[in-house]
Image (cartoon, one colour):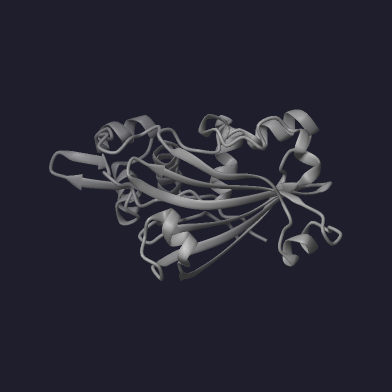
Amino acid sequence: MVTRMAHPYEQIAEHYRTKIRDGDLSPGDRLPSIKDLSTEHGVATATIRNALSWLQVEGYVVTTHRGTFVAERPKGAASARDRLARTIRTGSLFARGETARVTFAGLFIPPLYLAELFDLDPGDQLIRREYVTGKGQHRLMLAVDWYPATFGNVPDIFSTSPAKADSVLQRIEETTGRRVTSGRDAMHGRNADEREARLLTVAVGSPILAGAHEWADDQGLICYGEWCLPTDLTIGYEYTL
């Protein structure tokens, strides 16, 4: 099998996607000139133009006669993989400037499909955490994460404090020694139900992107999460063959 290395313009585009998603670059921030970016990254100006074109098409940046700027409301959203990678990279599940409102954190008897996924007996419980993320007045994601009840001694796992919402995976690793080493994502488009519409502040029946992820280690499942995004947000990912 031949593995194709990512083209430099793809690497550069992903570099700035990550900085925008993480909040290191804020809406309205101006990127360096094409010439300066060419010098910084050691590539031709045509390569920089290709990278910026990708970012513009995806809604991360806008280009005017004055230069290239981070979009006032970037359309790029973090996938489950992006959020996990950010946690490993920065220690935080959320981007800089992103807020989280935890609407539930406690023990809960899960639906049958989750009981089977976690290999539970009838009546067994899981830890359920529900939260809504946003930036400013915009709601970005509604998410529900499920963890084994044996993680009940992990600090902050039952906390609804916004300040502690982004450190659960870190606390799990510190307390149990378990660290996510593999994952799987699934996504599908559908319409928002009443609960999703209310928490995302959209109309019932609005189109959303719904997804689920499984994060595990060699001992088994650490976290199963379900989430949904409002319309007009873009998720992208790289792959090699």
